[in-house]
Every structure is written in C-alpha cells, then in structure tokens.
Image (cartoon, rainbow, N blue to C red; front, side, top):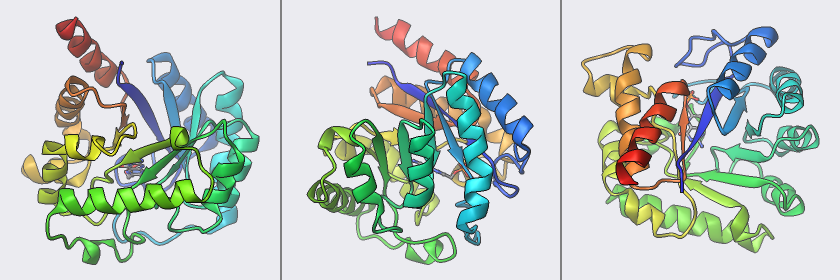
Length: 264
Ligand code: PMM
C-alpha cells in the first residue's frame, strides 16, 4: 500500500515551521490548492499551534481560522483533515465535509471528542500519543523505555476510544514526535516504529521540519530541515507506513515514488 502524504496547512500566526506565512484566508486556500495539485492525499488544516510553550487559542478564534478554509478546500474536492483537540471545532469541520479528525491529544484534551467520532462512522480519527498541553509538555518527557511506554499508552488510549463506541477501523495512531519527547526519544521511536505498528492500527508520522532535525543538523532552520524530512519519509515509505504529515508535498511524493519503483 502506498504511503499517503498529508499536507500541513497551519492557519496560525505563530506556527513554528512556517512562521505564520499561511495565515491569511486567501493565502491558506492557495497553499492548500497547491498541495492538492502536487498530489497530497489529505490536507490537514489546523488553527492552534502546538509548538512547545504555546498558549492555547480560544475556540471562536480557532473556528474563525479553520472553517472558511475547510469549506473552500472541500468545495475543490480535497480530502480534508481537521487538526484540533476540540470536539466543537471537529463537529463543525465534519459538517463542512472534513473526513479526518487529527487530534494530537488522542481524545484526552476534550472528553466529548470520542463520542463525536463514535457518532460519525464515516470519519477517520488520528489519535496521537500525548501527555499534556504545550505549556507543560517539555516537563513530561520522562520515560523508562520510550518505545515501550508510548506503545502502552497508545494501547490504553485506543482501548478507551473503542470502549466509547469508536470502530477500530476508524482509528489511526501516531507516536507524536516532539510532543513530550526529547530528540533522543524521537529517534528511538523512529528506529523501533515496528513495535508501534504491531498495535494493529495504521500509523501516521509527523517528523517534517521538527526541532530534533534542527538539532541533528547543527541548528538548521525549519526550511533547512527539508531534505532531512524527505530522508525520513523515504525510510518510512520503505517500511510501509500508512502516512506522513509534511509541510511540502512534492519532494515527499517523489521520495515515495522512488521507494515504490525500487520495491516493484
Ligand atoms: N505535529 C504537529 C501538529 N499536529 N498531528 C499529528 N497527527 N502528528 C504530529 O506529529 C503533529 C500533528 C506540530 O507540528 P507543526 O506545527 O509543524 O504542524
């Protein structure tokens, strides 16, 4: 199965990776349209920055940022994902046609999220490994064995989601690189991702332009982490991962094509 590319459309003024360049509505839509043209299978629209230390955005501002963009992208025929921890935002996004709910908290931030997904069987739910909001997450990066601990916490989370009525088929899991993780934790998770896959759910990975790549590359800026991000996509595609969440689309699509041809 081909690895899917989920293009990131952060509609926030402070997203660490794109410096808020995609903040205006017209710009966001144009950027989304370009990602569709380049072959992104899913466009992930987010209105709240999850950068370490970030303040939470209020619900109304979050809706005002993402909903008009989702409406336009759905009208263009795109498969849209809403990146939110709030069930109220997810609910309106679903009404506008979003087919994925990407919840970095895996349902922990909003107790009503699981019920919403359980009621919407046509929606896929991405449950990421998460231990707490951005303001506190750096202090929560404490593991005995990061792969074992993340795997156990994801297993507990998915079990709780299924107990709330979500179909296992609706669930995609994500190890949550950079979320309550040190650089070494991210590398350990990538190296041993197979153990996370063994939980039996499709796996999405978001490594694109993250800080641990900057650390590896002697302080490279987010834009300068692009080739390293593509290298990670190549390795993930080689292991048959379900999807990658990336800022650029074309270079990642090309990398996946190379892997597919190589393996054919
Ligand atoms: N990372 C960010 C935001 N949302 N969602 C998922 N499922 N996985 C991630 O790794 C993830 C995410 C933060 O990165 P960004 O600010 O570059 O979007």
